[in-house]
Image (cartoon, rainbow, N blue to C red; front, side, top):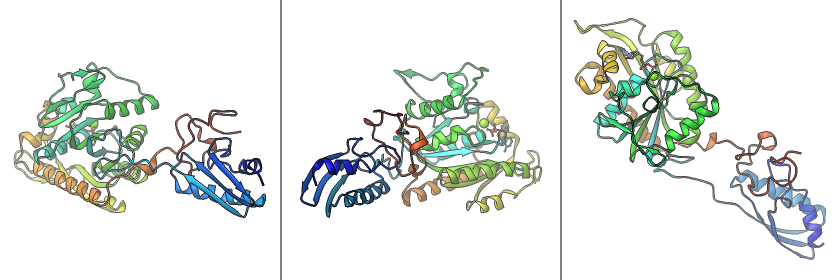
Length: 392
Ligand SMILES: Nc1ncnc2c1ncn2[C@@H]1O[C@H](COP(=O)(O)OP(=O)(O)O)[C@@H](O)[C@H]1O
Ligand SMILES: [Mg+2]
């Protein structure tokens, strides 16, 4: 047995997930043959355990065919990529933010932005360093609700400084566009916009970034979850059954995206009459709790319909700050405390992790040839010959 025979045999070992073999990729090094024993190095680019195991098995099989009895193959793998931000792991393109909270809803108009604003300020009032990102690129309402609609953010280099109000750092597409202007978004633009929001805004070191998402479950949600480890998801709903159907989709999305679900906020839940303070049932009440239970989570607040909430939003004077003693503000504060406790719990248990939802194909490589095991591909070699993805 000689080196050439060994290399020839190893050409039958394809790199898992690709159609090319480990010799063609240039992974095999330092082959030494002594009688029937063979030793060599295999330098691979994937840190996945499955990839190593499959290679070991295939190498054994192919070399046994040419009569090798002792096979000493050392497989060198890079360390698993773990970008750490405190106890958070997985991909994080905004590592100076400790925790990300995704506020979502099945549909628009249920009070997602109102909830994001009041929760963000409530947490700031409880002493946390809080940012509020308006990722609702279709209907960016946060600047008006936070009273900064007429302010333009400062740009330094290619970075943007967030605005600030009520102790909260704020950024919104609304602050970057002319008033009343509309943008038509394609999928790829949405992904770019979300990434830029996370990467190019000079947030300070934040304890929590509250993210007001566009309604529904689409590209923006997926991109966000793949870009940063989301510590907690909150779904805002109104109590009507039709709204609850949409909320189920939102809760299901958290599960699919591996986002720990902090809970559901039932908004517009009953009406507190401003003249008599009495609470009455308009859209229904208490319908949300069973839905939360279905998804192993809880109802974290019932926020009544209150004119002060709407006026606070319209005038940029949020109720939580301007009427801190109202029943509604107490409920927002309680929800904020529960959210912070939930975040602590997630971090104590090892933190949020978005590795499971990273794309399995590297940039520029088509998914057609790639099995789930090949998380990382040989970058320098996969463009040589044939299709760039290794497909034949
Ligand atoms: N609990 C509430 N009581 C009264 N008005 C509310 C309440 N929640 C939201 N609103 C008002 O309802 C409208 C829609 O809320 P918004 O937060 O913009 O919804 P979304 O972001 O889900 O589209 C806004 O005018 C807001 O001020
Ligand atoms: Mg909104």
